[in-house]
Amino acid sequence: MTTTGAREDTEDRVFAALANATRREVLRLLRDGGPQPVQALADHFAIRRPSLSEHLKVLRGAGLVSEERSGRQRIYRLEAAPLAELQDWLHPYEVFWRDRLKGLGELLDRLPDEGRP
Image (cartoon, rainbow, N blue to C red; front, side):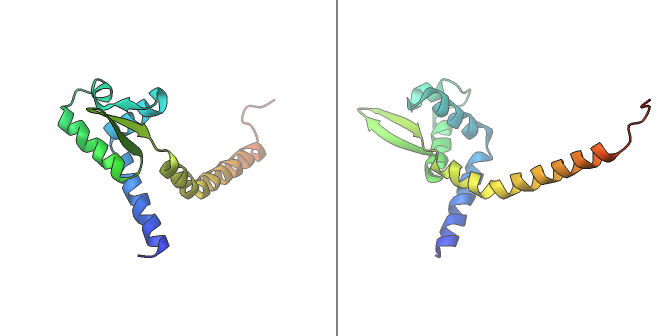
């Protein structure tokens, strides 16, 4: 696989992981609360622990979390590097929309105000 193909595969896994609200919430919890054991994460959800484990598996596969064993516990940590790579991918779209909105603002500034004295 080429480097570009590997990067696209990683991006696909990250986008797929982020497509689920539960997984996005897990990332938020890890971002705001730092590394946490599975049970602390599970306490935030009304789903069975095996279901949460499946979500964590997807997040691990996308490189968005890492797992460390501490005795009998598994501690999860946010790994933000794949999100930075997505930001790099999204940046040209942000620039596109910023330019479009700037153009709209300039057009609106040139239009006469209705009801203006």
